Image (cartoon, rainbow, N blue to C red; front, side, top):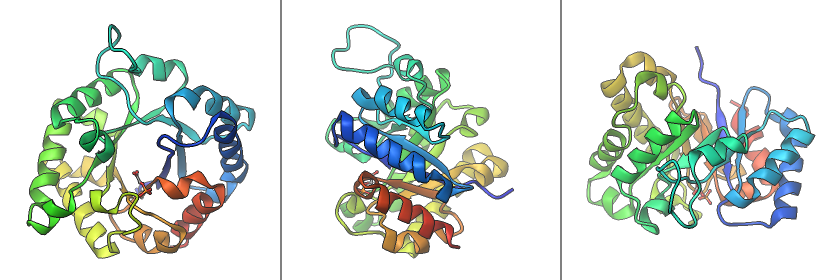
Length: 256
Ligand code: PGA
């Protein structure tokens, strides 16, 4: 069975409430252009409620995702958001292990793994991000880094959890830099990640899991990237902040 493509917009710490609502409304209004593709919007946590309401008002099937969550259920964790709080706002997905969380906020594979387990316990679908730095790639460490991130990050997840998990391969050097991996570099990394999933969970799970590419995806490179056999969609930062570029990426990606 072909894998359904999934394109998610990671709005990061951008927009205000009115703009978040407006962008969600614009994407919902144009979501018919993305027939056959699953769309997910990941606004800042404070705006999940407003964006969720805008999507429901438009009777849209566009999904809602968080950008992060804590791995504990509740308690004295000032400033944090729990999995149950996300569920309370009808959030379906959550981005975990984004390279900005890893590098700026010091999230280790162990922390990310605890979040993955908590997300699944709460029935959230993780968008599990992995990817190497430029130094790691140039130092010949690409496969070792991906192997460590996948093995450690997915520890303890059952096969049934993998059916609800999306992996996002995002080379750190391509995020927000305007530099995109070539489609060959991306395809090679995706095929390797799929082979790691096969080692851990078997061929069927590996054939079914969706692996998004992320890192400076734009309308101009979406078609080539999404034509690769192991690329099942995109996780989009900067270009997801405008409905025009977000929808154009999806349309171009669908052309093949
Ligand atoms: P970018 O971000 O598209 O702005 O490079 C992607 C991401 O961080 O998920």
